Image (cartoon, rainbow, N blue to C red; front, side, top):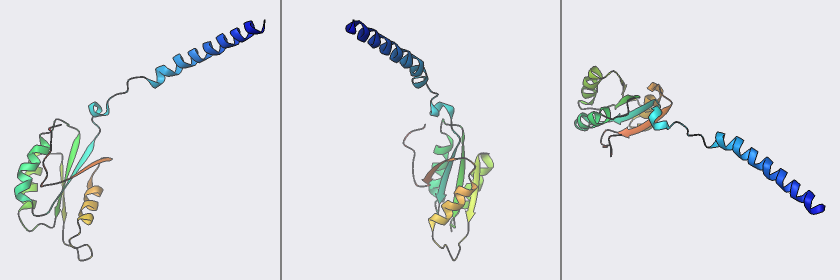
Length: 141
């Protein structure tokens, strides 16, 4: 008699656990949309100081990425060469480019952090990607 009661209790608890497993496993193991295919909007922030030569090559590699939902924030960090002119020529060709021109400031002279802060404020997207003009992407993602 006691063994029969224990048997039915065991069967009942096993049934409850199986029902619980089937109900909640469908929620837990649903295939979620891949974030890379959703194309989260990204702001690519590029800080450049006297990088006119590198920008000409680098911006082509950034613009030709397969990922399409991004803006480019170009920061001219008080350059003394033609960096600003190169940035302006790219801005005329591509609508997703913003330019932040940082002038020398006595309080923040030579401080890249100040230039990046202005670039972050100019960006419109929540997700930020930081790079410099003398870098090269490893892949054409």
